[in-house]
Length: 340
Image 1 (cartoon, rainbow, N blue to C red):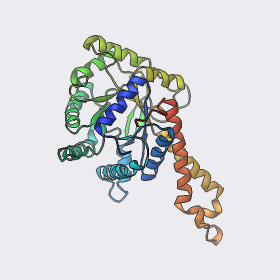
Image 2 (cartoon, rainbow, N blue to C red):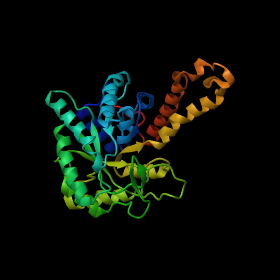
Image 3 (tube, helix red, strand yellow):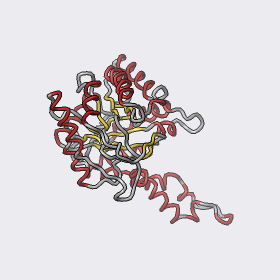
Image 4 (cartoon, rainbow, N blue to C red):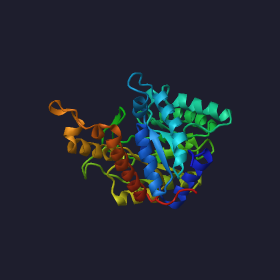
């Protein structure tokens, strides 16, 4: 199937909300990790989301120039071609973009998609994320209004992060403390500024103790039941039941019960990066240790081309990451839900 159209992406999110499941949103940094994500979704018979962070896009742009837009566009164009060979619908998304990188990343990509739509084509990406968690909520929402209008004009969904997620991702970091919990007032102010769909659809990354990266048990206190309070608080004021489509950030290492509670309360997208990075790299490390004499020209020998050929270990990496994506689909209940 091709990359999801705006209509299909909206249907995907609606189905997830109604069915109380979520799509894994898999960060990719190469064509190989893209194939791993697509393979995992296909094997799970689940539609899904593939996303590119600012750091991932810069890496994709090549180390000679390191241009984020070039990297993001190149991978998206590649994805539009190869995704047709996989029997699932895939939405392309750009991950965390702070204020200082908007002009070098999200705004140019929005403009590119606007021109595509005006020419009768679909947008290049189906959604973009604005991470204003380092700004005041007032400034965050003011910029969000501008970006939401631009996104709606390009038939794109905006994701907004209104309060901090702990840990660090691509240079945006927050301490792990009591500020990592969105309040009902925060949610009401968001609805007042961005609307509840009439100004354009958006996904909401609310904070309920989320932390990027991997931490030992007990270091992170998640409260996914807080999402229900946000839904009910805004519903009481605006009269729209379950108004938000939530995103679960910092989900690596979450328990099954925490995930289940989040799904019951409106999470439709859960980001996965740390776990899939490890799943991709672990088989490569195993291959290198097992074939030390083959991948290196030890003691003047010539090594074994079959073992240092990137395809030999690259296939293992793809399989390892695909298996982790398959597991994520099972955990998030999206297995077998693809739109046919």
